Image (cartoon, rainbow, N blue to C red):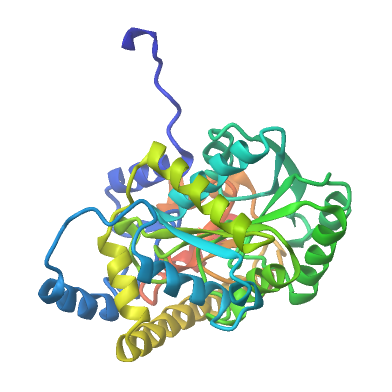
Length: 397
């Protein structure tokens, strides 16, 4: 049987990580991998997570299965984090949240459920997007279409072209949107643009599917939730996939959730039952550890305050690196304007340099950037930023 298989192409980002690890140069810089790193270049366990783990070690007395929907307290508190405690859709009892194995697991459950509910529905994905969106969701059987999102030449959201495409999307199709901290561009929708999308969805009848993996890393926990909350307020149906990998630092714990907003409480119960059926067929039960930690942190005033303060530190460090990089490379012999970097949000930014310049940075200077020119700003620190800036100015000359 296996002799009929051929090797698959390695994921470009994973391939870049492998090349970086194999590079013997001491001054090499990894700006490709999508994890937060502190100023020492380390991905730390957050202090609130450490404290919660210590408590959990004392309190946890079983490793029994926790059920297909995951931890109920986690689901309740994640929904509150996403939509707020007083959201009208929650008050109307038309929202259901299930724990999922990370943001990817959440996205796949949502994709499988869409295919069950309406197999002929098309999923519209912005260009560019996180590279795994397409294989992850097309693997659920969905037909993928594209809408323009970012104008690389102009270095900003291509709002006119995006809205024009959305106006032509048929009722019942799905539109994938990034909740905040757009990956890979860092270019986020404004409040006015979110409002316009909500109006278009209501008018045209398409259903938003929001991937929100970075809440708190853009402008703050509340501000970053504007798009999700405004659409849930306005629309009868939408889907939200969320992740705790970035804002809780729980990358390897695979802690996420999938949330469905339905028109009525009865419909919401049906959707939840179908989502649990999907989960049962894919992974059966989600892992418990990360969800128990998040529930403990969000449900305890002291731990929540500690976590929120540390999340502020993470966001402020990333923003400081945005400013520092922009200041150091804005004056360059290539005459390129990099002011757009400061206008973007989250861990990522598009540099907008050429593929040849990306290759030179890697080959000559040991600076690893994905071919799209997306950089992880959290990979920059006070020890390597001068070398990075000097190298960039050299390849731009």
